[in-house]
Length: 216
Image (cartoon, rainbow, N blue to C red; front, side, top):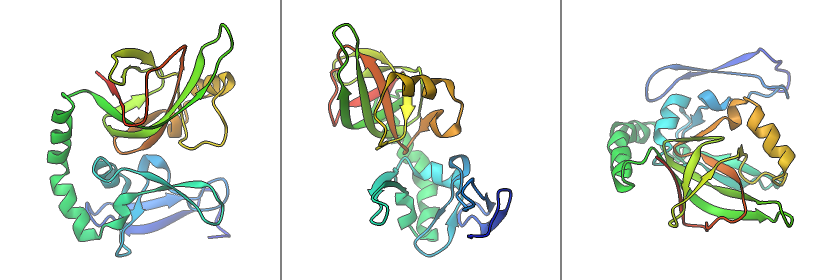
């Protein structure tokens, strides 16, 4: 691993669910790190699940962030990785029905986001505040500049920027500008089961942990 170079690949074998071959490439640090667009996960029995199958399972087994005891940084944890290959295959057979039940529960909205934390950076006398809302997508997808419904009060707002959950860098006008203009896949959208942080620029936002953000 330590001697790998950019462009090198590593074959992880076949996906335990669909049989597709899983190949990952080295990143800029010379370490093999799967990209989000096809991020596989190693299952409890040592087999691998490809990124496509993993995305399907995330609506039932959403991502979580946990503290790395060595680096003291928050790291993504895939809950589906706690399954065995056999259990993952069984879950995939029923995940479509689970998703349809979820969509029915929320009135068949295009996308639903569960709010877990709200951080507010107060604006000046004439400037709006910056609201960083962290949580995970129940289903569907959200992108920067989407207009959404906020909480139970029926307020409409625009997601000004998608951010990394638990980012050590606080929200700012410069961060919003960079996040809105760049096309990096990591921050282009957030899909069902993924952890995400939305930044809103509003004078007031009636939102608290446990509320929903929805897109029609």
